[in-house]
Image (cartoon, rainbow, N blue to C red; front, top):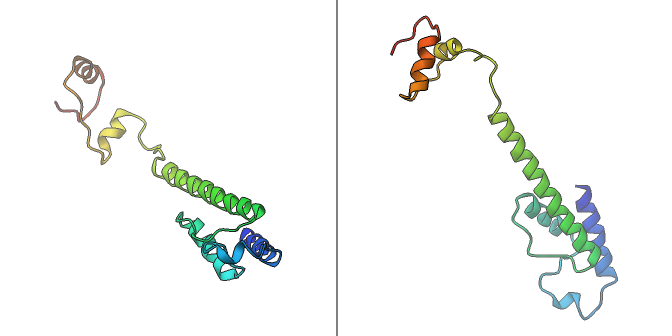
Length: 127
């Protein structure tokens, strides 16, 4: 919200001190209305971009800052969700715990698996 106010101030400033030949003739110039700035902010949050853009260098820098900041926020949020979904469980520590859990267990028919299950003592193990 703070950056929206900053962009609004920049846009008002660039329209107040505009070059009479440049800004009125450009169809994509960001108008000095707070609603237009909020629509641009909403486009940044939704990662859709904005058709209107500020014409001054400071306005463009602020706009780029908005899009980069929102991209980082989206990346951090996505990484946080992935980390929550991949959290490990401490309830399974042994093979016995794995067998008594609701997880289905399978093993490949290779010599190592056969050897491992022969030397490992498990109460309800069936082949």
